[in-house]
Image (cartoon, rainbow over all chains, first blue to last red; front, top):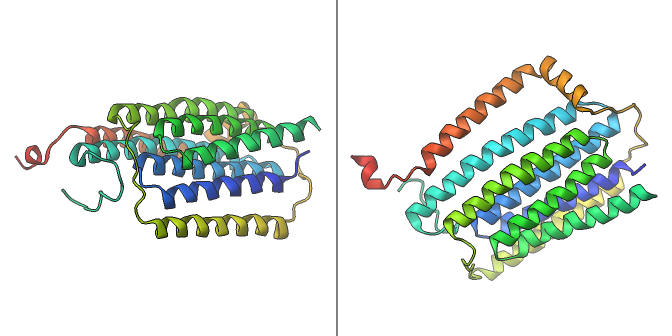
Length: 100
Length: 169
């Protein structure tokens, strides 16, 4: 039986890598993939605690998080396509206007 | 013993490919590495006795969402877009601060999170999840379906080719 803490540590490491991507990269798609990485790290934490306490609520939460991540990916990528059409780049430094 | 070997092998795979996502300059390589990382996480879900969610992870995340990412990268032709390294001080601060954050998080978990072996019997088959979802969680489930519909409409609206001049007409 693998201790629950190990899963929590793995999740913390993956979350930190995601934060690193968001803080240091400027390519919009890469930042977005880092956010997906953080979402997955949180999912792993939910499942680790669900197993620890023997309750299925964490599983349902993970299910909903996956659905919301899908919606978020669709809308976010549409925003980047729109930005690319207007600015010909997806460097997030260029996206400094709320209106164009 | 086999469990531990599988855990460490796939934990290493997940972390290494996640680092490739963050550090590699080509977004296509990053997206494919993220798929590999998600597969390793699906193995973790199996180790946590949640095979249904492992299947969802592979089908929805690695299958659908990452294909959408790859499709957008290919569509916008971003494979060869270089990222010139401006602002080295801020980048250095980003790396150091989030390394400190990660070390602190791991230290906190090792020192303060004290958990015994799992207390209750844990069952997470598709049947159990389905029963809970359509009894206790039926309202959030319907809300998520509305949210997905809104996301479809929003994505269509945002990605349509409208130039500023056409909007004002």
